[in-house]
Amino acid sequence: MAQTTLPAGSAKTEVSGTTRKPFWRDVHRLTPYLFLVLPISLYVVWVIGPMFYSVWMSFTNADGISRQEFIGLDNYRRLFDDDIFWTSFFNNIRWLVAFITIPIAAGLGLALILNNDLPGTRFFKAGFFSPMVVSSVVIGLVWSWMYQPYGMINELLSRLGREGMPIGFLADPDLVTWSIIGPALWRQVGYVMLLYLAGLKNVDRTLVEAARVDGASSFRSFRDIVLPMLQPVTVIIVVISIIDALRSFDLVNIMTRGGPYNQSNVLAQMMYLEAFNNYNMGYGAAIATVLALISIVFIFTYLRRMLRVEMEY
Image 1 (cartoon, rainbow, N blue to C red):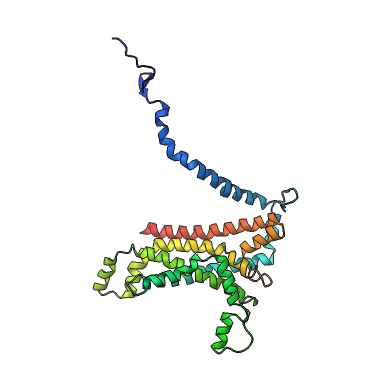
Image 2: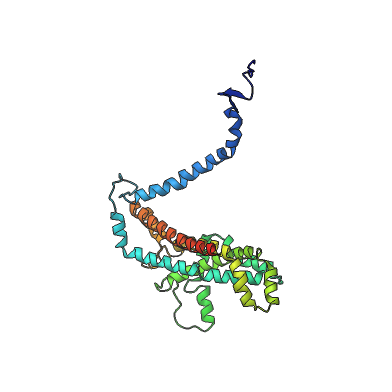
């Protein structure tokens, strides 16, 4: 029997009794991955690389001028003996507690109200969300003016009957941290409200109406039907709130720069001052590493707990 041979330019070639397509015929399958090369490369160069370099720098005496020398854990020993670090750490905890309570409760309440067809609903939605559009720099400057001894807030308090010296909101060590958290919460509430409004659109209203027909109260319908169905949105909101609270920097830097006497300092502000004002870049990198680890612990602990709850259902 005569053996049939294929032309040299044929789409198939015979190899050991089997046929396969030339490799250039499968190149099109790699096209989606080729589009990922550039963004992944940029992400590695600008995010992943500096992150690992920052961790390495935390073990050196880098100051941006002289040659780096490896000093081991000296920066971390200095850090945990630094009173300013502990003040900044507990201020971050205050930010964290405030961010995962007040905006979530207020945002959910506003979303439940504005999810109904009421007159002026769009106006109120835009009004509550508008602070999120404004730059943090502008918010910090405006609220600093309002907090002045003869600013709007003190003037309003005096008209309401308060007597005595004006309150130094940004000068009182006991008030300054909460005075900065206030504008941050004012900005965050509208964002949380918008996320909950999006989540409420996915709630099956027929289940709520069926529960009411069966005699369930509005509160019980909300607790047993609406709130569990909002759980995925709540997870996202809590994670975002934790990240925003732990990386708080802009309002602190604009309004007080950590004063008075470092009483309003947070870890990000302390890191910035040490690295770029005092040129202790190795020490600043150690603060940044600790802040990243704290964020990871909080976020992964919460996500693990929520995942366990989801698996139970």
